[in-house]
Image (cartoon, rainbow, N blue to C red; front, side, top):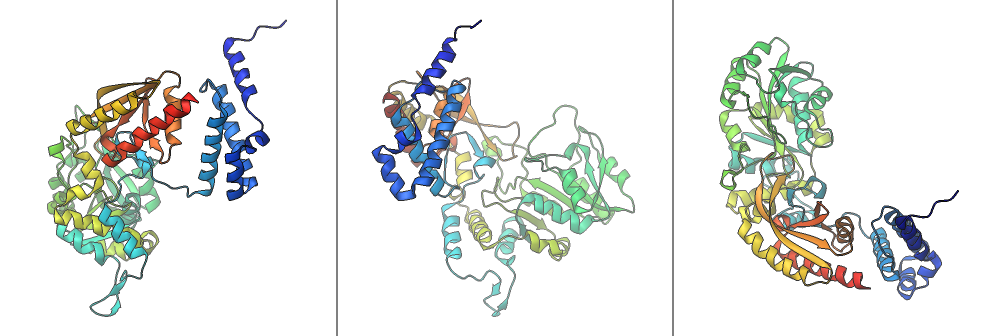
Length: 472
């Protein structure tokens, strides 16, 4: 006994029959010319990948039609992507400023210029020009952090996880580290404080409860095996309600009383006060240095706005000990990171925070975004098939910082008469440069809070190209 095909099954079968053979596609003039440039084998592989993807999109109901022009464009794009460099710039219209998947903080122009200048020539990376002898690569950023934070010594390694690991391995290997249960955090891709502690060779000594830890809990845990008292900033979550956490000054005094180093993992690397933006709970690293914390660790590519790096700063004695650890050489950074970080810190010293892209984006007002969003919405809505609305919304700083807090924005909500939001998003990602939006309730949302103003025109042109291709 047979059953009649459903309309969706009939549509899928009809679309699948419209898919041309590989040889038919490669016979088109554009693809013949491309084959001469890149070779037939590479083009055939790209064509087969595109056709396989097309069948999957048809099966999942993402496509309602197939055109030779669309296939040709996708094959050209897939081929070019194969021969092009994989890592490339994108337009971030997601509304997440420090987007971990999109490279976190963009570098300042001065940082890029200094990095390029340093990379293209020999440099005094480990050479003392005054003495004419070998120097240390730490010196280039050490003096800048001393001026910015009042720190006695600063080291730079490849990320904050490495910084925390190196501090604990040096100061607490074979002994105990006292940490509040409410601070045993995980930040992104399974970076967990208990795991880092275990790998460092230190033994974790948990105190207090998830929501309440008092000074007496720390004091009661100190014993002959204690090597470090540790405080961890809850960078990506908040516990509210019936909570307690001892002030930093009290922990500093407790550590001094027992002659123990106090290590504080600040995570996000805040160097300035963000309260004027309405962002609270991100203590500047300088305040911890002033309070007398022995070792402070934080990231370079989050709120600091520089390259990926892990900063260890604070008092000279424990940091010199950390520098003598053989693992410091394993985890140290190269000249490119030092150059970019040095130039970023110099912008702070000049007071030129607008030069740091992440900070500049954070300070854009909703009114400024609304004016740009209105102009973009007019351009998109002028294209056939598109419906556009402007809506109030929220952007986030992201990057494991400022949890539960947001920045006001104006969203451009886009829908298409035929294509789904998922399909629109996929087509924007295939744009050159790719445009990354977010999708909510089957609508594509563009948040200009994370888009540089000069990129607005490219977004508008991308939608014009989408409309032109849809009509074919």
